Image (tube, rainbow, N blue to C red; front, side, top):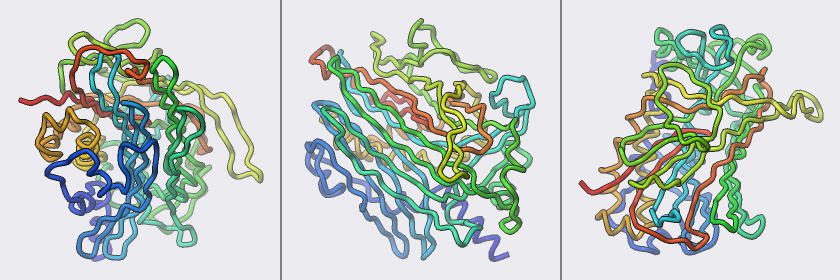
Length: 446
């Protein structure tokens, strides 16, 4: 029973993540330049990475990585956990908050953030559309649990990819996770709690790599390309002790989807198809998308951000020596999904943590934010509910999978004032998922 309680506690710490929040002090106020005491660098520098930001409380501690790029009034940043040490137990959480801060050509200040939510596997038995019709067909969350490892000879690892300048106005940074055990959690309500708490089935994913490639063109458009890799399923284990060949589980009809959580709590926004301008309504069932999504802000609906659908991906077989490419041009499907209660439970731990991190970064980057709020805590109080109000999700489904390595790169385009255009003012805080969780928030004084 004691072992059962310990496992349950580990799951609770991992998914609700109260530990890192308790570790981090909240700044009551922040002046330009104060960020050096937190990050070891200033926002006036062109680019940097600090992979050894250390926080502790009692017997627990954690290290984080922050990378940053700043060009004119545009900046991009990544905040990610390296490891959490809770009384000697090492926990690796593939949590990443990617953000961009810029002003639109109309001089509206925008913050956009991106957070990894979860992977969703499903067996295509309903509708024949290759999409995850959760509730009508078997579906499972694929959730990394690196501290509950049934393969003693395999050591999970995490490696920051430092910010690098690849050319004029072209930068890249990211994180790499290797040998990650992942709990398979049933998406149906009857088995969800049991499979979340107990290791009914665990798989070993060779690698998860997320890199952000940022380039700025002469028109002021910023192309933020997410270089997203899901490694091959190398092994599987029932109940933590009974090995099974992954090929016995990953039948051809099984697909995998990267899910992005979208939440909208302001009336002063529109989410449209980028070409025809039609508003996308929250779906009642799985709906494929056939056009890029555009985010517009303000009363004049100024275009601020596009989400490219990234329809192509490659499949690589890691079991061969050397690796072989099984397919160079598979077609990904892009969908809107209705949100479920279990979805929210899995990402609930991210909400307060993400708001905390994003509010501190936004307060340090923006003079306008500092003028509107007395400190990051004040900003958190106004933005915190944004992560709990979505009715739908955005997902990218990979119909051909078979447990092989997936390499896909969707493109995100931000419309900035870097070309020298100017206009009216306004402040908008958007938190939007890249390969992941997304939230759109308008923060105003009440």
